[in-house]
Image (tube, rainbow, N blue to C red; front, side, top):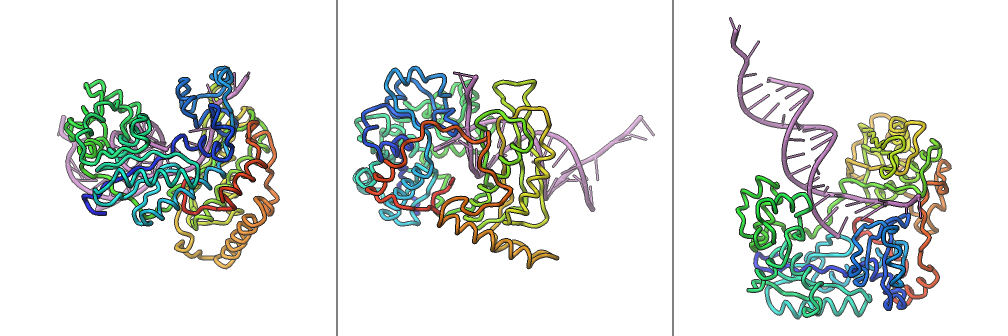
Length: 435
DNA sequence: TCTGGGGTCCTAGGACCC
DNA sequence: TCTGGGGTCCTAGGACCC
């Protein structure tokens, strides 16, 4: 992109809630929250709920009464639905500016190369209107010189009704006003810890950070902090990353529906998680050579104490064969497991991923390995076509006390009718990261 | 009673080598 | 009694993001 081109950040408003509302119009009249797996935490809130003071990731039980008093719709998450919406929105953006001008940053936001600074507000409004019309999802658009400033602009576009969801601050005299109104903790890249450090040094707003000496900031934050200062000054440090990068790790971790102590049951859960992670890995054309497994007891109820342990295995060869990875995972599990404890959470992470096509040849059993690898891919395809787990390893049980408790799942039959109408067929996205 | 999940990057410090 | 120094690699942990 040209150095002078503007950057736009397109960010979906209350994304998961907006998806649920897009397929169920009745929800538009009520406050809505979407819950995490297990229905434990609130992971998406409608504006009304935000106004009640409910925080992101707040446990449901702490605010259940408040929500019910306001007739709030409480919904279990449905990630397949959110991904199909994300996919369609991405396609619209690509259609508008071209694939090489879109950086998909997360499931619900993307940076765009907005081109030369000409009619930016009009451009933003067009994008916003089109996405709303075609998907029912409201988005906000912030446009400026750098990504960090675009975050600020987007934040204000969301908060201020006057902007109608689009704020163009490209070389604008209002940028400093915007920065003065932005608390230091709301700056992109400044988390809780850094915010404390900066406040101790008298830096309380984005504007004060803009005026700071980047080298000093690097001293008590890190190189990121220094970059943030420059970005706030309109100097591009973070380029648009428009080519898709391979994942460096893939994880599948869950809190169990209830605390478990049975070795068998927990092992089953870990194998189940492994299978899911492997599917995702193969779908992305990757192979792994190191895995780690972790087990944790309930950190909120240490009984008799909080136990958390992670064990890793590293192979000399990369692999994408489920049965082989099972063996790695099993050895990690045996190391991490201590009898007599009640476990509440477990997970597996695949590290050191590499494109499956480029992994090194094995000295002894290359032919066998390739056969197994092909078999796994065929199974993936069958499962994709005929339904998940139509074919699965005999070792795998998808039932157990570890399963999530989702009691607020929205009615799938209703969804399907509405999804049909919106053209949300059986899309399976390769483009949206963080599957 | 009830408390999410999936990622990335940076840094300090230890191990090791010559 | 005197007791090097520089470089690289790896890892765990911290911080941050959505």
